[in-house]
Image (tube, rainbow, N blue to C red):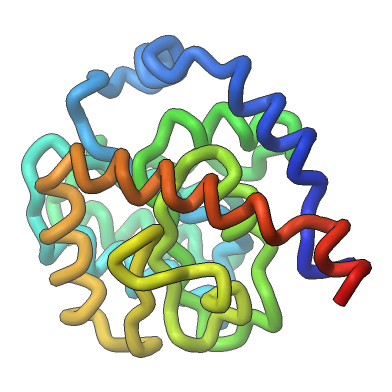
Amino acid sequence: TPSAVDNDWWLAQSAQIDRAQVRQAWGITPEATVVVFCGKLQPWKRPQDLLAAFGAAAVPNSYLLFVGDGDLRAGLTAQVTALELGDRVRFLGFVGQRQLPAIYTAADLFCLCSDYEPFGVVVSEAMLCGCGAVVSDRVGARQLVDPGQNGEIYPCGEIVALQQILQRLLTDPQRLAQLGEQARARMTTWSPQENVAA
């Protein structure tokens, strides 16, 4: 079942995470809002779209974490400098799967901007860890996203649309928490068991 992950494992790992402790290690306060991207920094994942939208949104006390590595890293680093975003954008590099629950659980929002993504199990992983999901309309896992309930879907490549979503959500921590709760609830009906039955 390539479109499902071990829900029980992700839920158990997430439940053990001390969110405040993880953020303290990052040097990020509990009150800040954190967006995370997880994937290869390759053209079809369009991480540059998220960076541009985050920079344009200009939400105070918000951070963007890139988890993963790839050919676009040098260009993205240069873009961070050009946008004068300082340490509000962090590149965590490649991270093993056992470390991902801590990152997702300590974040508030997950974003995947791909123009080609047959599914994208990282969306499932993040949702199981209580992250609302913002995905492009080219991401297969958009079928898990109920706009306004557990995340948002936007037209791939439309940076202004993504910027507006980030402005709306990153200024509303209570809404982010609700999206995260609903994201985790949605995953109760999307596991290997349901995929096998289907």
